[in-house]
Each structure stands twice: as structure tokens, then as C-alpha cells.
Length: 120
Image (cartoon, rainbow, N blue to C red):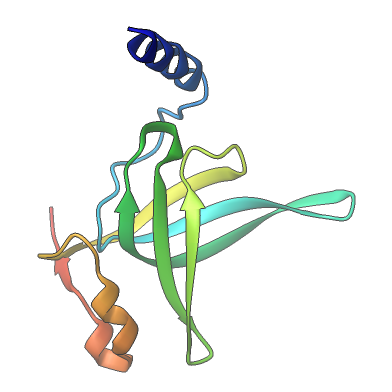
């Protein structure tokens, strides 16, 4: 009984911090994400673009992994969606994918990394 009671307490605390204005994200979406970055005493917003290759759904701890190619080097970054540091998430385009994780994109380069676009 104590375990169930503690879970409800945790969920009630987490509800305060969950963002409601986040768009519905799917694997394969190309997104633009804005993050607050602190440099010394100044804060600025840095945007980055990329394809979502995985989503880990876990209430408040939901994360997305974004992959992009910079100067012929593949860069992956994990973002905590409900973080107060994330200011904006914008979906650029959606892709039609048949897998839950797009880790196979790591071994591909150039035109082989293109995904079929999904039109709504």
C-alpha cells in the first residue's frame, strides 16, 4: 500500500512541472528546438534543427534524441522535453517511418538519410 501512495504523491508533484504546450512529436519528425544557454552572466536562446531518432516516454522525464549532421560529422543530442530550459519546439516536417527508433540513420550518410515526407 505504501508504494501506491508514494506513486500518487510523486505524480501530483510532477503535474506542476509538466508543460502542456508541447506539440505532438513522433519519431522521424524534423524539428527546430530553442534552448536557453547561460554563458557567464548572460543568457541567450540557441536553436538547433534535426530529426528525432528516438523518444523515451516517461511522464516528466520524457526525452527525445535529435540527430543532425554538422560539417560531415553526425551529432546527436538528448533533450528533456519538460525542461524549463527549452523555450520552444517547432515541427518543420513530418516523415513516414516504420520503426520506433531510427538508429539505422547513424550508419548512413548523404541522400541515404532522407525520409519519406508525410503530408497531412
